[in-house]
Length: 390
Image 1 (tube, one colour):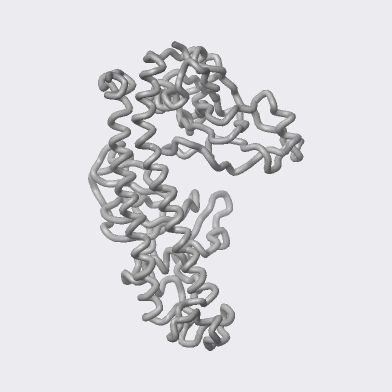
Image 2 (cartoon, one colour; image 1 turned 180 degrees about the horizontal axis):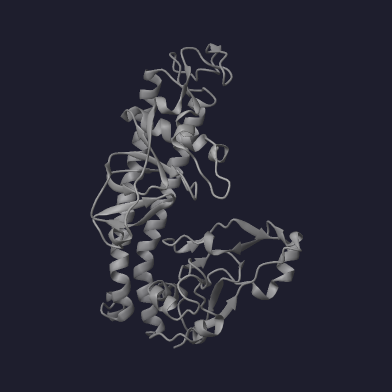
């Protein structure tokens, strides 16, 4: 069948810049940057439409459960299923899958067809475009609806577990961040009597950063970490398969057979994009657009991580045409330093929560590899689902 026979294709549209009243908080507006490559379901977006915007683009509304595919530009080929009724921008084609086919199967089919989508695009590698008519004309082999459902169920069971583990990780990190705020912002850490220090009358003293607990001091970020920069890698050494991850400002960008570091590190963008703040573990190669914080002791790791999370990185931006943060500026950020015993107690608590996060990450990686191995074989019929055959 062609994709046009699978359901109704809708190409999105962006409200005119002359109509700012079209933006609001009612209906999700999906752009390619909202779509994370390894997530099946899209639940959050950066922008939403108002009632006026909904009325303007009512013909482009796609229902929850549509298969959303990026079809223009460098992000082309990303696929996701929207969790809520939405409108997309013009870079996206969406399929409202009909009752004769399974939407999850269509998602996995297109997830496995990245190269096919790009090969049928026009405009070259710099700005590939897969227009609606070409998109709808793409042909694929579809099994019966019953087998589609069985294949989708097998793959979905893996993705559902991955999504559950990711949700657990977000919850665990939010809990840790809340405790960090209680201890190191509100100063409600356990006092000697076991009660929260500040609320039980603990002595506070004046400092350059406001009132802080007695025996605490003002220091610099470089007191707890060494700040260094990653190293660029030749394109020939960057590939999809390899022993070790290559990390950029927003996470993994490829694999290689060499590594630069083998320790717990805190990473954020240095130039081009400020990226996300995340912890790297084990053997990795880190690119030169990343600032690396190397904890000076184990006890400093999660303390430094949440200090960086608390910091407004934009305030350190020196770039004019693109974001730029220097090592020196990051090193000299003033922070409040607790006594060693407080820092040790915090580390014991935080490390227990992060051990669970890292164990979940290991499971996620394992499940992702299983899914990615099964996906092409199931789509080609090289492996048949047992429940279907029975």
